[in-house]
Amino acid sequence: MLKEKLNNIQKKSLKERFLLVLGILFFLIYLVLGLMIMFWKKLPLDMEPKYRYAFGGLLIVYSGIRFLRLINSKEN
Image (cartoon, rainbow, N blue to C red; front, top):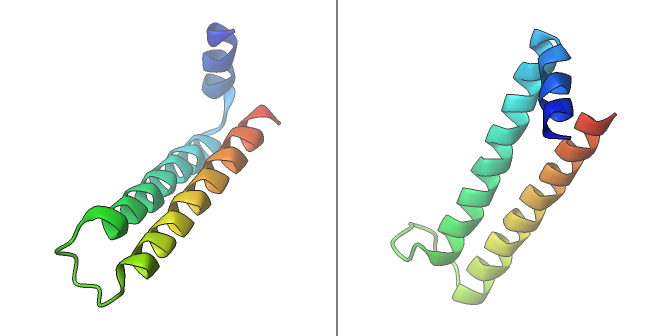
């Protein structure tokens, strides 16, 4: 199964591989940004803690949605 997935990635065109890497990069950016907003206290955001956690959680959920879309697009 792993060989099949690696073979599928190798068959993709250069554009498709670039978009895959870009999708993974933005997934990681949204995930790290959400975690930073939630837990980095010295981040210069003038927000109450409950709003920081809500906004950080929203970014983490959005990164999860992007990841699921990325996985589903790879299968097609």
